[in-house]
Image 1: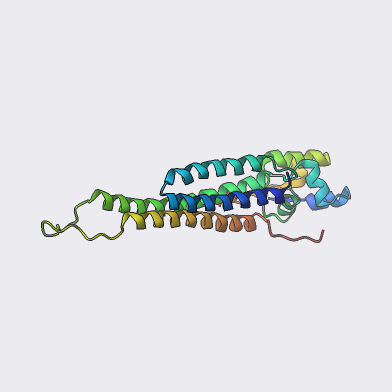
Image 2: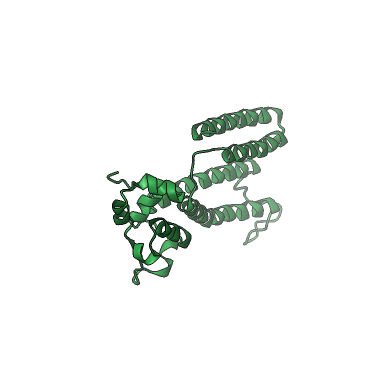
Length: 73
Length: 148
């Protein structure tokens, strides 16, 4: 699952810390999502996209090649 | 309560438990350390709930869940294998071919040694959990660095 959080953060002039505080997670979680080390839950994905005032699909890009159980490995 | 205060309290509880364990051994009363252990763990849980300024988000929960699941997957096999062997020894299950009448099967492990090994296996569980936790923390980007 690719994402554009870093781009949206730059557009809104936000640090990882500020975004993390705004949506109630740790800064490390934002960093892990940006680096594609962690796939966020639907709830968190919606919270991030609502924060930037866009649809989920505009921030998160579904990769069809990614196995369904990748997060349970 | 700050996180460091919580670690300090946990350390004090661990030290107190160690002293009670020693005292319990001296008095030959296992009930003392058993009750103290339950109270100690309850106190740690209570103190943990009062820690402020720490966000436990979904990624932290996932890391903890995955680490514990893998730990149990390994631990229960090792623990059950040993326990089955120990119970067989305690129940005096006859061996095949049967030994000559009158001579008991060789005593591989005494009850004392069984207790020590079980305690060692529980310590192994803690090491396994820490190891898996570090592995999953690394996998889910805990040690990633950024330019910020």
